[in-house]
Length: 75
Image 1 (cartoon, rainbow, N blue to C red):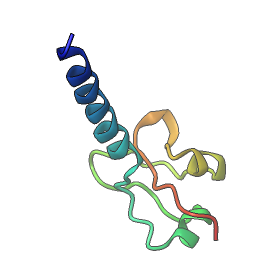
Image 2: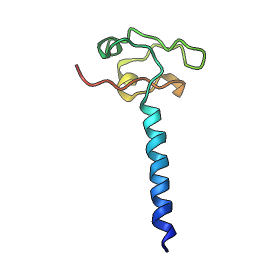
Image 3: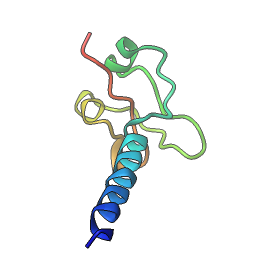
Image 4: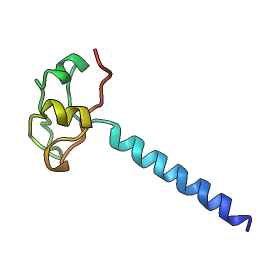
């Protein structure tokens, strides 16, 4: 019975680190203002080369789930 809380804690830690990584971006928007203006592209080899729409930017993901965009605070 004592192993269950430890396993649960370990699982929660894994979920925390994975979800935190997904929110982080690889796109090179210089500022959140530029990000909101949709004036950037994901341009490295392992990212999509798609301009994010405002809605996609708010949701934090580019088209086809190919890359993650930074979630910026409202300016």
